[in-house]
Amino acid sequence: MSSKKNAPGATGALSDQLDGGSLTIVAQATPWGHALTQASEAARRGFHVFPLGRGKLPAIRSPHREDPPGTPPCRGECGRPGHGVHDATNDLDVVAALFERAPHATGYGVACGRGDVPLIGIDLDRKNGVDGVDGLERLAQEHGFEVPRTVTVCTPSGGFHLWFTGPAGARVPNSAGKVAPGIDVRGTAGYLVGPGSVTPAGVYALHPDLHEPTVFPIPAPLLRLVLPPVPVRPVPVRRGAGRLGRRMLGLVRTVLEAHPGERNGRLFWAACKAFEAAHNGQADAGAVERALVEAALAVGLDEREARTTIASAQRTTGRGRA
Image (cartoon, rainbow, N blue to C red; front, side):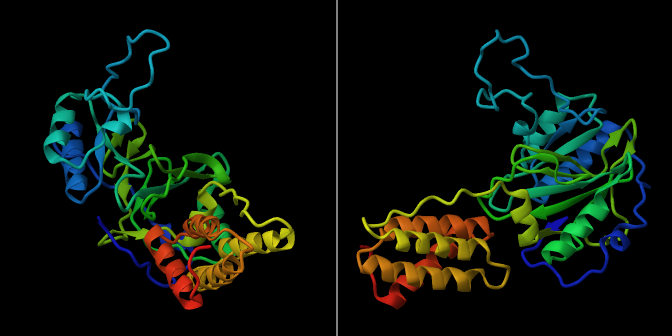
């Protein structure tokens, strides 16, 4: 499994893309040994992993299980193993040490939201009359995006886990059915069950049609759907400039409503207009800049790219900060 920064073109209907997924992997040697082997391979590829038991829960018991009530929560700061996803690492020696402490492990978790290219998991359930694949297809049609042939893991219940990368610094909340029925999201402090993991229900397996599985970036419209709404902060304006204040909010909204391919252009235009207003003493340039950066991050631009575009607009208008 590798990562890639540019998604491919059209791939056809998602249901056609996923049909034919099978669970043909057979655990080699012992489930523990197979899980360690698969987890180590994932770690070599840069993913952060930790051991899971048969119930898909962390296999190492918490060192704080006997702490008195009211003890502040620990997310691994104490340095001892047993903090679930917070134990996740891509250090092969640490992975081996974690599995040594988990002799009943039969699988491994892959942490989401870690590193410069954080992993985002889209869990598509197909059970109890709900079809997450159909739900994602509808979202793709409504919001105008394509689902790339990214790493896909077949689950024992007939569903699928789609692996995507997100922008650096993005904090994607975990959710269940919030985006659409049958679609769960695994983001910051969440995890996915790694392929090759064995559970009482069956084995998690890579989709057989993915001969060279690659993790693609999450489509920008889908990222906007899984991110929490970004509150637009009021932009400070000079007294008597209420009309201009509404205009500043409109500039921020222009960026928030940008589609892929027009985000930088809209940001540049909005920044030029904002700096012109700031030069005339009608708005605070620093506050406007911060609001535009937040809007750019919300639509999938990284901070460096956003600030570069804004700085270019500032030079173009020839306006410094007011």
